[in-house]
Amino acid sequence: MSNFNSPMRLSSSLIKHLKYRVRMGSNPLLPHSRSFTTTEGHRPIIVHKRSLDILHDPWFNKGTSFSFTERDRLDLRGLLPPNVMSTEQQIERFMVDLKRLEEQARDGPSDPNALAKWRILNRLHDRNETMYYKVLIANIEEYAPIVYTPTVGLVCQNYSGLFRRPRGMYFSAEDRGEMMSMVYNWPADQVDMIVVTDGSRILGLGDLGVQGIGIAIGKLDLYVAAAGINPQRVLPVMIDVGSNNEKLLKDPLYLGLQRHRLDGDEYLAVVDEFMEAVFTRWPHVIVQFEDFQSKWAFKLLQRYRNTYRMFNDDVQGTAGVAIAGLLGAVRAQGRPMIDFPKQKIVVAGAGSAGIGVLNATRKTMARMLGNNEHAFQSAGRQFWVVDAKGLITEEREDLDPEACPFARNVKEIHRQGLREGASLVEVVQQVKPDVLLGLSAVGGLFSKEVLEALRGSTSTRPAIFAMSNPTTNAECTPEEAFSIVGDNVVFASGSPFKDVDLGLKWLILFLL
Image (tube, rainbow, N blue to C red):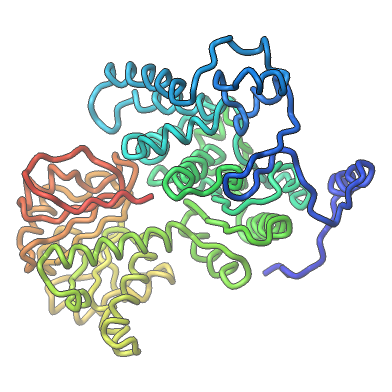
């Protein structure tokens, strides 16, 4: 591990940056004010920009709602149409265009017209950030699936062709030794939240390289719209260490490094330098790691969690939401909450998200059982984990160390009529689980045979968690679950589905 307390390394570009600030009459060692940094609350903002610079800055552009007094004071007279329109009128005009497109759109969450809606919203974001977030906040239920999953998956797959205006920051393997100066290229002196990805495992779509920054942008849009975080104090980041996606490496239009991914100590050196740089400039920032492949997700979490203010969304965020859903399923089954540690859970998928959910759920069960070593071991016996090779047991060779605690005892599974590598259908038939939990990123994995086997569950209301996203990667749909298992099923998903008209209420989880 690198020495996080080592002195700041000054690159040549950082030295030039500091010398420039000295010439401009500021102390380079003290925080300095920038004209576009907002203050807390709703106090007025001093803007030192004028004319087209304001109209081209989405943070301060108000479009045609600038009053004539503002137009005179800011040198905007003649640069805008003469009719002064309120923000509400501008939003109404924008919504008319967007609704016109929606009326022509086909049904279905995977409809390509969703990408057209994203383009329209993105153009608004480019020119008027305030109006963009007003629209998103007022229509969050409708447009969250556009700015994030499932549409964001399609955006990331096509990001090189969709790229128009840069948003966020890019740190690459070619920037080693320069990152400490690069962070000062970002205009905001205060950043509260960074979402960073290396593009290695975007949703269930695999390695998308530099195009994965779309996931960081979309996640922060939701944080601003739904959690009220200041949009001027968030930063989406891509760490580009190459890609192992051969299609991207051969694409002349690909915007990232066209080389295979760094590995081992070289990879860690890049991420170490990035973390040291961002926490040097913004010591109170929170860094969220997003969509890193399992190989690095746990390792980086353990590497930094006691040194920096950070977390991994796939390992910890997904786990938190999943536990809330699992506890809700117990209540929906009409059982007391103390019965949660008795739930038999079959898990499909042993990646970073799957192991993260397993670890958190086992800890929750153990706490309810007394929070001791015996309780911890007892809770571990409530899970049957199935990966691409089938049921994981102690006989499995070359098993990921993170999955080892959930490998089943061979003698125990033999008594249950199972074996190492047993199929998902066989496991569901023999275990008769209360919960079937999918974190596999394999669309349709919960086949008709699997769902029919779940009808034999010992629970009066079995729960199906088809949590993989985007929607095309969901293990099954609500319609399939209800039509095969029965209308008493509790259903949860990682991406939004259209309502199923069954005259019932069911549990839907939309993992953010």
